[in-house]
Length: 106
Image (cartoon, rainbow, N blue to C red; front, side, top):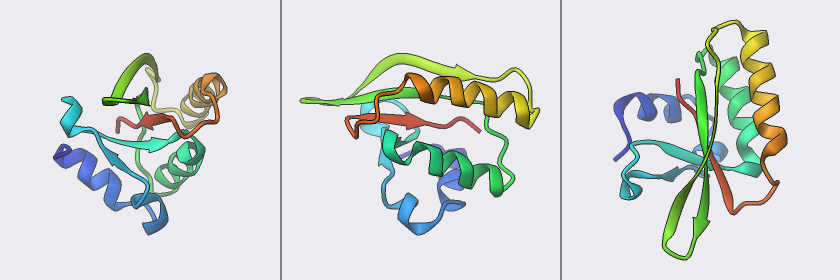
């Protein structure tokens, strides 16, 4: 099961995004991940909800489940311009393929 903080994060999202979440608990990570194709929508929904996003990680679906890609992003600032800039840089590196999933740390 994902962490309590991740449960609260998930609860702020619209139902259609909530339903796309993948629980990474079985992979040893108490987080939810979202398909790359929905990542911008998740980011936007969290910002609108007033959630301070600190960063996130990239995961890939493989034959055994999910595997970390060891790609991540973070912001040392809570300034929305800095956070958005870092996010856009990270998003530009992600293939638009539903084999890739993104987590959000808030």
